[in-house]
Length: 179
Image (cartoon, rainbow, N blue to C red; front, side, top):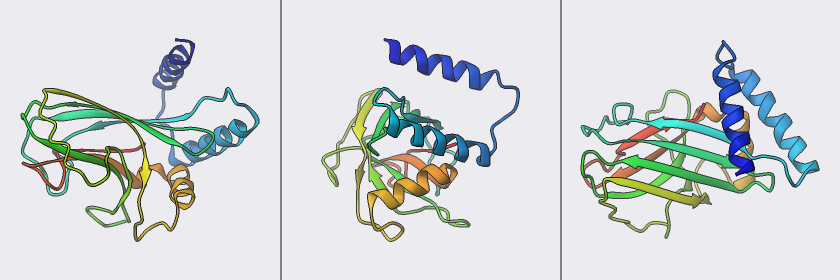
């Protein structure tokens, strides 16, 4: 409970700050938090939250389904995701990922799987889907290792997005960019 009260307090402070954080500020904050995490086993994870929508998928997906993803990065480099999908479109949800997006590209390669077993169609059809998963790094053309991907994620989180795929929208049912 103590952990969640810190998360809520941090979100309240961020929401009341009056100005949106810049990418430079986010990067320096993340680096400072990660550096201080090494010194303390009690250090909180770095947390990214994003709203997932179908209209920003490429190609856009015609569905009413939407969601929220929270990505937590712990001091040991482990990535944990909490994704809640409101499956209003009654989709058959297959799997989810964190992708890296190069400038000018519409889609990018999978960097971490957010569903397991990797590569298996989960066929989730419930109206409210709650997926909690440690990120599973996969070989990809952008990063040779988990550590290289993680360094880029911390330095430039806006170059990464979370999305889940469905039978109706194989390219993605809902996407959300990390802040």
